[in-house]
Length: 406
Image (cartoon, rainbow, N blue to C red):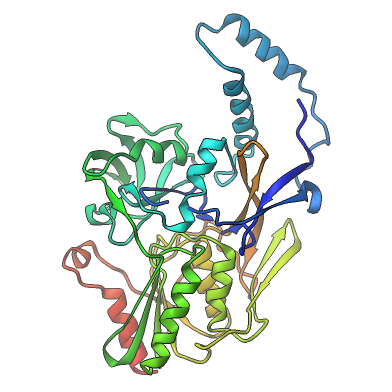
């Protein structure tokens, strides 16, 4: 068995880097993630210095011995492709990193549909996997059946239609949760000390990645639900409308935004920041391997801005929030964010399979790592279940009040 040194890297207008959705082991069930219409480019897998400490070659004799024993004794039917796929999944799983995954060609196609906002049927939430291996809700998408039912970020999924989720990957759980429009799925979740049951009707999920409106008192509201291929274009259109209507203050709502493409986060952050301002750094070990800087297109520079976050704000959403706060361009309000401070890259192989692998940790311009810690807002404002049920947005109201004095 030989693993090639040259692979095909998926590229498009973005860098192919994801920060949760980038997606962590994030899978949207009911909404999809995208590959974009990119071309494939050959790259050297060893462009980074190795920090794994692994030898260049591995003795596979023990694997061959297990294979021979399995082939001789297993009471069932297996194909060679099943065995090979199992080995490849095992290599990724050996990292114990919930964000490093191998996808077969079929699994890769499902994963690559996610960042474009393709309309699919499901319940409209994103799944992650925590450090203990539990499948958890990263965030319910705004306006989705999952959000309407009351699912929260960091809810642990215990069972899906009576089947235990223990040992499932986020992808396994997502596949089981998906289904035809109008059908129901029952989830038992663990929230703190309580177990709750939700029966949710699947629906067609098609949520724009960015929405905008002008609120009372001329405050521009910009809600970004994830950082996808088309998000920056939608945000630019919103900014043009803001300019036409004389907006002088902005609320950037990143609540329940699980992240996405680093390139999209860079472009959107740049709208507020000076040219070449540092947005984030990527490190492997203690070595800085990449820096992301503002593009210089900054029509919102100097405009008082509040960024709203909550426990469902992750990854690229956290990159954006910290870049604006560290750059003195915004204040952060809401609740502590999710805490995903690593970056993945998707490597595509000639058979259509892919490896999503954690390549680095990211740090804010001030050198902050929020991995497993989250962002503590400048002003903490909680949103109660009762207020949500009564359609009272306490956090949005607090942001508007804050901006009244700016």
